[in-house]
Image (cartoon, rainbow over the protein chains, first blue to last red):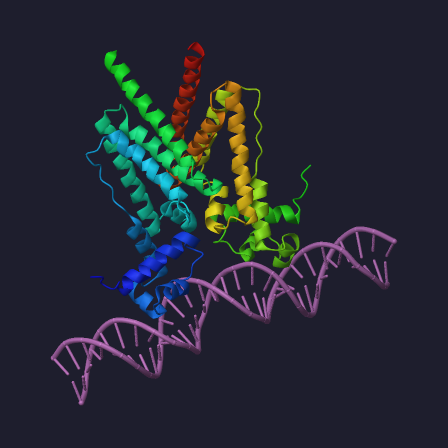
Length: 189
Length: 189
DNA sequence: CATCAGGTAAACAGATCGGTGTACTAATAA
DNA sequence: TTATTAGTACACCGATCTGTTTACCTGATG
């Protein structure tokens, strides 16, 4: 039973596609309405301003992840593998949250705040898994893993080369192993 | 003896300030002309299109660096220190090249190609220094260092927190040391 | 003095931007 | 049947965009 998508959903889908593929500032409201097959009036009925639509776009992209029961190290490295797959899929255009921050350039914009929260959520995910692994400084290493992820995204974008995902993954392994052997050494001392 | 800046230079300085602070798409040609204290006609006389001005903006930002005679490891870590200082300076808005790629979203745009060349130049710098240090895979580690730099930039931007520079530097140390101890181990074997 | 390159200010062109107002239509519920 | 709701098509608003045109000015050079 396929429920037909509501107007709001079609608008959001069109905004997601166009905003991500072409950029927030590059796409006009008329274009989104046309892509959604909806009159501009209806669009403005659901999303009173373009800023609201931008915020909804980023909110809808916000995929929460929770640490699973799988081994922490595998979960983290698997994340890098998924990254590389995203890079290889045609049409990769970078991180929508980082892109929104740079395109809008306004720290008080609702979209910027959503972006910050997204990155915080990701950071907490790394931190939880690293703490479970018993590394000495989960917060610091979580930040470093996040740096690797952001850097892989940016590098894949400007180089147009998905294999940086593998490089980032390898770096993550070295950092994690170093943090673990550190712990062992400390434990022995 | 202060030579008065030429019109072309004043226009470029205005473009640099406004493009970097507010974004390429967010700034109009009229605004740049006004900031430069120059008529719009004069601006278009020096830079026939906005795209030309964008390309000139990125070209002017292109600071070549050559490996110096200082110890390679110090040069690389010093680069991260300079990064952190840039983050802490008010008005940091990310990497102008990455920003241009995301804002323009056109791989054939002259500005995009300048961005790619810039990153290649940086990569070559790391590679040369790492090769001088005798690490096993200078190319791979250079990519990883570049990932750290890009990631630190993106993270500093969305977090609005300069200290990620330190985290990236620490990660770079771990990666470099691991690559060196690897080499020693191989040499001993 | 005459010329002319290089600058100015300002209007203009044509397109697009975010957002509204209006008049019409189709379906639904009282 | 009639009133209401939710949608459409489309013109319109003022602002802004890149880029051009026009008319004027000014200072150096012959």
